[in-house]
Image 1 (cartoon, rainbow, N blue to C red):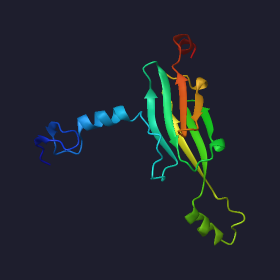
Image 2 (image 1 turned 90 degrees about the horizontal axis):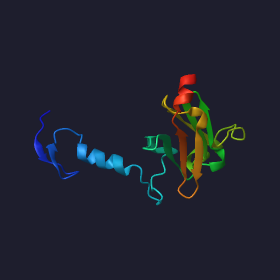
Image 3 (image 1 turned 120 degrees about the horizontal axis):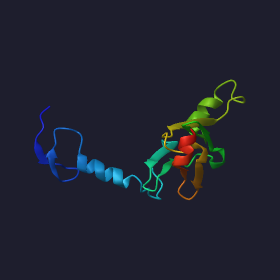
Length: 157
């Protein structure tokens, strides 16, 4: 693959355009990833979309997740075991699936709910016992936070 220094159409900068990677455009996209618009997306093909995840400058672990409009907010369950964080949500099946289920002979026994789970790995420097969840109903956002392990607690381990 040949690479040349040409003007990039994504960021209008000069760098190698023979590769798919655009460093300037990628940096800009990462910086903008924490901003979420309040407008509803026309593409509702997601159940849970991770907006941002990582350690903030104030040494708090933070994971922001956007929940689909069809998700039953009361069904959200968060489980922490060791360094594993699991977010479980339920969503009602869409109309095309409900038509298919009605054709089944045992449709009275079939649940019309889709269960979805997101499994996240918490870094070892984070206190998994202190995970807190906040649900923003207006923006349909789930925000999980946890502090870093204090040095005195780290010595006891």
